[in-house]
Structure formats: structure tokens, C-alpha cells
Image 1 (cartoon, rainbow, N blue to C red):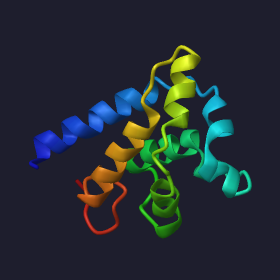
Image 2 (image 1 turned 90 degrees about the vertical axis):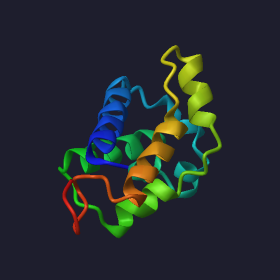
Image 3 (image 1 turned 60 degrees about the vertical axis):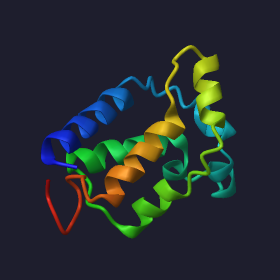
Image 4 (image 1 turned 180 degrees about the vertical axis):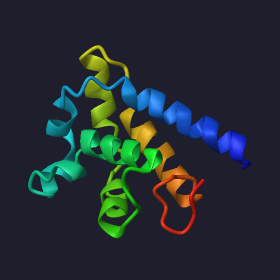
Length: 115
């Protein structure tokens, strides 16, 4: 993937994350959030915020942040609830896309490489 494609992917992800109204209804249905005993960065909303700040370069990539992103079970409960509340975000897909960017080293918050 070249620089132009990766920038387009990051821009698309940021645009979609910005559509989130921060209602936080999604956190109540997330099994990973419930198992973490209510740690915010283990919720769908928390993961979207982590992705936003990693992509912007505000946060640097580190193990606890990566762990919280990869703890998403991709069950889709947050998606269904988001659609039921009228927002129509595909939260699990956004998290999956963010994990792809991380795995390819295409976030600004990457310690080893700034893109």
C-alpha cells in the first residue's frame, strides 16, 4: 500500500469515527467491556477514541492500547445497537480497519515510523 492509499484509508476511518455521537449505548452490550470490569478503553467507544488519537499522532502506540484494540471480539453487538439507535455506524468494522492500519504500521502514533 502506498502513502496516498494509506492516507485515504486513515482519512476515511477518521471521518467515520467522527460520526459517532458518543452516546455510549454500545458499551453496555460489549462482552469484552463487561469482562474487563468496566474499563473504558475496553469498550467500543473507547476503542474508537484510541484509534482516533493513534491515527492523529496524539497517542503513541504501546502494549496496553494495542491490547484493548485486539480484545474486541468482533461479535457485532455494538453494530446492532448503534443501528437500532439510528446512527448506523459499523463499529466492529471500524475497529477491524484500525487494527489493519496498526498491523501495517500506518498510524502516526507508531514509535518506529511516522507516516
